[in-house]
Length: 132
Image 1 (cartoon, rainbow, N blue to C red):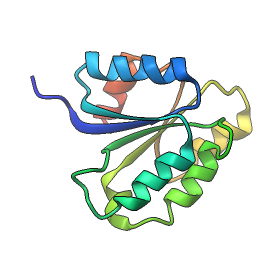
Image 2: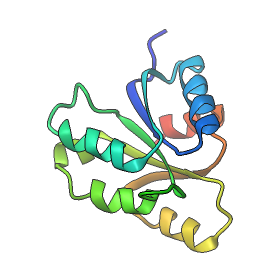
Image 3: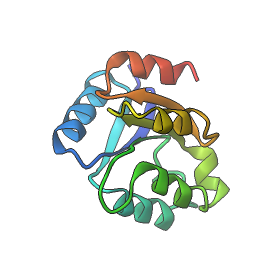
Image 4: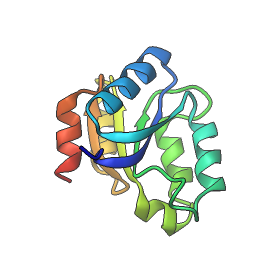
């Protein structure tokens, strides 16, 4: 069976969450390739450098809210300044273990975020994404 997506990206500073999410994605046959970044700035640099080349871009980006250097909302501010070729190609899935109502409200009301979900990533999230 063909994976649902060719490429997804995970941005999370927690190495264990990154590893588990990548394993689930490949085991569930959700994506053929998983790009893993432990900081949002490095992921943004990759996206900016390849923003016109959809073959290299992920179709789904999982981004955590709380990270050092650049948090998930700062990532989105910068991401939204990139080319429409990129932003039209990718769906942003914000993931977090937050219980802060302000973060949840901001994530659910940001038009650039396709889905907000709580950690850890699990198989039901993949089904939710496929139904977007």
